[in-house]
Image (tube, rainbow, N blue to C red; front, side, top):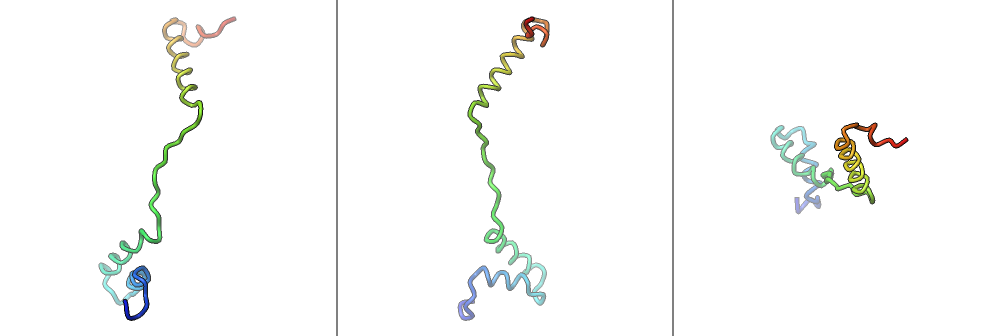
Length: 78
């Protein structure tokens, strides 16, 4: 590897593609090379301004409807 000028990733890819190697050796090279070629997806947290306030308002409406005993009809003023 050092004498032929290949970088470690290039070497792993060469081994992975070498059909003269055993499947186990090729799979090991593929597993070791994968993180350098395919990034892992990370979870992210979604934040929307005001979303908590909307949820709180909806919860209050549901509670009001339940407390009044009339369901949604109790929330409508006519």
